Image 1 (cartoon, rainbow, N blue to C red):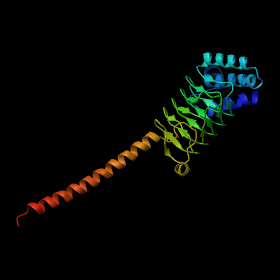
Image 2 (cartoon, rainbow, N blue to C red; image 1 turned 180 degrees about the horizontal axis):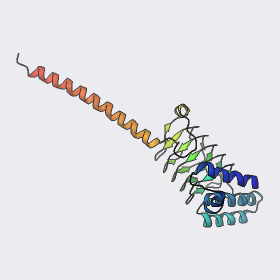
Image 3 (cartoon, rainbow, N blue to C red; image 1 turned 120 degrees about the horizontal axis):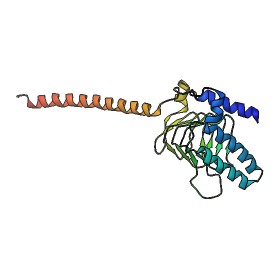
Image 4 (cartoon, rainbow, N blue to C red; image 1 turned 90 degrees about the vertical axis):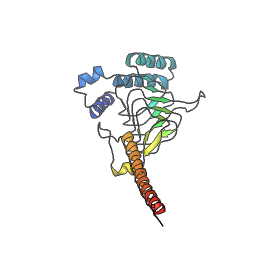
Length: 226
């Protein structure tokens, strides 16, 4: 257990440049507290102490502002940055080395007692306010932009933005300049999409100028005295 706690603390140092020392992390990081409370609640849940598991997760929600159902399955080195408003549903599954920012929801779209929440692969990053809704898989290394709403499967190493979520960077593109989880070294999908729009506008302006020149030449020929 203490090995896992040290691993959790080290994952904070790896992902948050604002972290100064271990004491600060122990007392001032609600995302870390939420994970530790979840692990105890999950043990109670898997050992069929359902009420105690839910009650402990409810206390964790009250203390941290993060709601993690004790039935969810979460891997190693999971980190929630800032954390307020994060909701993780009962049948959600999260791989190793996953990073969530505040306001993220891993929710369902049905009331049936089936697998209804998403599965996140290893090394996934989900931006603040994003909503991942449904029982599909977000592939390893995928990036979900802030405030995106994703309702369908995401391939490995893809970048998804918008409402509804659309893929703006594929695995092949990501392989050309592989981004890691460090702050400031993640792709900016909005900027990429805007740059593409500007390229299209410039191309349309070029075509318009060419058509305008052809129109002027034709007009001159028609107006020329015969």
